[in-house]
Image 1 (cartoon, rainbow, N blue to C red):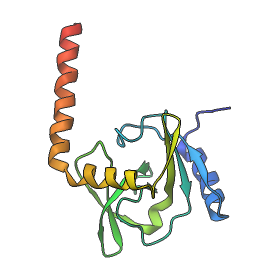
Image 2: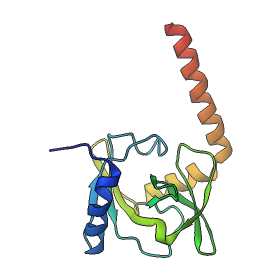
Image 3: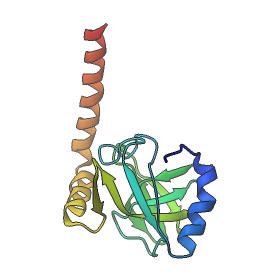
Length: 154
């Protein structure tokens, strides 16, 4: 049985499960991790974080404003991390280890489970995040096509 629950309600349970070495699975909300993770469709399995995080790890963390975010590590500076969603163009710097709740161990997309250690996943991360300029063109192109479709449909 699937039930939609707010992250504020889930976090204590997630923390408890991870603290005893278990994993937890949920469907993330939002579009910041497109095209890899689709809003409410795909699932992620979290495990307890192992520090220091590595580049391309996918942690769930809590921002200082209280919101919960699942973004990829794209940079490391001293004891802080730079995070960016796949559908975003700017890096959020200054994320500390104490903000990290868990790290994605695997994800399920279109019914198939992928390990975050899988070579194909690592290649996707490398190509997607190293080509920010191409991503800017991609995102702008998608926005342009959406506007064109809206005008055609009326």
